[in-house]
Image (tube, rainbow, N blue to C red; front, top):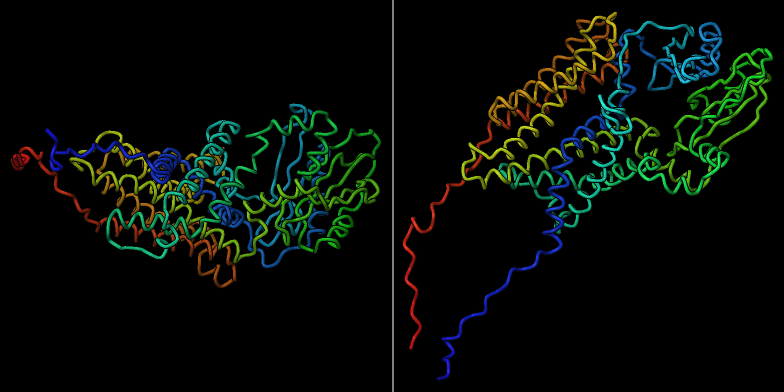
Length: 547
């Protein structure tokens, strides 16, 4: 018998292959999650590092407000004269000069005979007198800068490898995110408030697109800054001999290797006159550092390096003088194309060439990048919570990720604020004071993690956000009570470093308070769990085929 047309059974469709966007979506999700907690800390501490000099000033309130930049030539001469008394036997001095963002002069010098001359001492000096100043021992903003790529409590080499691995994860997440979201630029103009998962996704998309070129640039250039660590093989193959490696260092560093002392005593020529020659080339306030090798010896050399003002590159530019006669020996003002490319990428990452407006743009877009990472972490839990059979009793993996999110995001704000509180509260004469400021940050940060383990997720979010808001809001009050630099005095004297810092603290406190209020008011929409189909309704009988 022939089979009737309606007796023909439809062919069973096989599993549909996964498209490129689905694959990239999985890669984006897991690359972002696995490195997200570390990336958030790297982004936030890197963001505040754009104002690390201003943070350092705020953390040393004993140092007076700098109304105008002192003449670098005079400052260098004063500090050199002071070092001739306190470090006369040192084979090398390095003097950092004040500028528009830094109100102190600093110096470090080698201690002879200690570990092959590798040990150093350092001090802070008053630019007006050249004498040492007594300021509280603090890591200042430099700690946040160092932390964002080499962390703390671990070997520097391992930390930089970990930071590079996370940066590579970030680069993968950026590229895969662009591929995944085919309407990413359209979604930038769409934000649906109060829609739960949809709102988190809209926020994540908007923050990602807003700073996409910046995020890609800052991630890639971050890898480039340490490329000789991550991929040293090309350099090792190309530069095999000592002279070749020395030439490479000369192209990428302003450090001039000191020669051997002759043993013949010779007074140091006028440092002021040497700096004047550099000012004639680069401008009065565009001098970064003065390095003196073998001071007091006939073989002395003085290297004066150019500042970052007016050029988007950190390629080395310096003048090298004979320290005994003051004669100009070398003017290094150009490097090769490869070294200049490296210098430009390094400068783009650091942003030191920026004026005030550009620096604030760096800060705001980088803060948006921090929020991008944070919203991505939160989105992972929001998306999966809606699918849990019992949202109040999640499985352990989900519970752990959610707690780590809370501690990494809200807890880090508490930890960083705690470090600033420690700066104001710790005794000035405390041994290891600088280290205890840093310990205070990690103790507080660790305490927030313990707190999240003990509290329900929503309450932990709200409580830690309020804690961060309170610590930030009360910092200017604490500073007014413990120092002679209250906000009203800073405003009256035109000290916008202290006044701007206090006002920024209040703005960040308001942001944390708004997030706490929003989180407390949020009522997630829980989907009812459907019963098994077999118990909910009987299966309809299969209709028989027509004969």
